[in-house]
View (tube, rainbow, N blue to C red):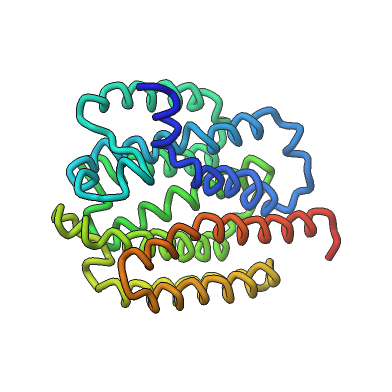
Length: 283
């Protein structure tokens, strides 16, 4: 298996999800200034969450999802299809790209716990014996868990002290919505593969309505801290959910879905800018 194929499996369009959550939202959210940029571990784990962490998440996902993925038309084109003969090689890539970083996690209880939660949720979202992704509701909790744990890890590495309860809840709601929405375009393939998802359980349109509510609630919870991103995020996600509900065909819905990584990145950038301004005492 060539590195180009491994990188495709890691979903480069999603790289910023983990890395930015750690390096910007988590670290800047500690509101402890910018001392963390002089800590070599900050840069090491920024690299980790940029690429190796995504090789872990999506590599394990593609290994255990082969029976579903072979029925999904976007596999082999928009995304890679990991056939059985390639799975051992991919396991080796996952191990070699992740195990070394474990030795550099600081011996601090909050950091150890948050990093362990990330590894646990990222692995057993797809892997047996838990395979959370086949259990509606639990799948969303596991998916949201590894994103939020990444931010919490960055928060404590940057010097955060008090547990950020409200941001954690808001982050969980946002990530649950993101996960649930991503299941809507895959309803047909997942149904054929007899894979249960929240989108199959309550239907595509109901899932979109649920995501809409979760996005708005998440924005409301953190409006006190990041008002501009909260307002613009509410408007943007409302528009995306509206366009998704208006889609007449699977192709139209999938086209809206392909814009989602760019939208998430833009909103994440707005959050980072507001937190940056707070660290600079602009307001």
